Image 1 (cartoon, rainbow, N blue to C red):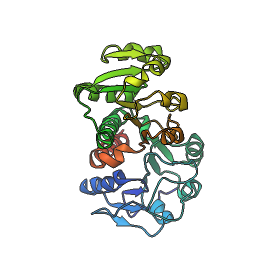
Image 2 (image 1 turned 30 degrees about the vertical axis):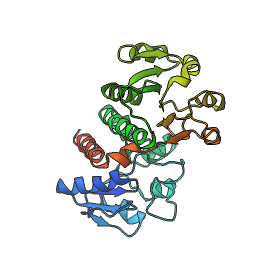
Image 3 (image 1 turned 60 degrees about the vertical axis):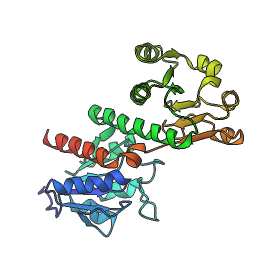
Image 4 (image 1 turned 90 degrees about the horizontal axis):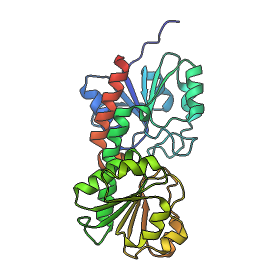
Length: 289
């Protein structure tokens, strides 16, 4: 079958400010770029009139990170109407390449059956690690904005020591915080012991919880319930950067007057230009391989 002739090189669809900057990044590489359902109009590129036209316009389709927040619709805020990912799938053609982050396995399977090459950006080790930098900086920014006390010399608890937990703990140590890492994974505690002031399991955290000025949660499971929240000091600031719905009982926190917030999409909020550049580099690298 003869490949279709596309009017553009890249189509950027949906997402947050990272996608806006990405469209500009690609345009600066002399790529012909079209876009649809971006949260703001980029300085360069052509806005198509529909999702269908965007999907048909280019051989490479770039969707957001995360691809979907609810599993059914494309992650976007520009269109008042939801854009079902099934509709996106129906507009894709064999031979196209689709990039996005956190793509549902079901969608990926159906797209590949259709002859579409699918790359999940968050499976790229380089990008996943870079993403932790923007996430850590955003979490710290949220903490500083919300708290009446300095981070400097404060007592900070980091729950979980995966990619984000490791980067966040390192940033906090660099700001002269007293950093305590808690995890029920023995391997994570062993790694954290090399850098943190103290480590322990979540049971130990529950015992020591009143000591902390800041609590940063990275564990995508219910770890901060009503009983634990009752033990915290009233001035504590709780920043949850785990995947939705997070690990905090936010209703209980509100009832007790605690400052607790779920912070999704921090790279798109605090470092969209840098994050877009990193995404662009990964995409262009994969396309050359």
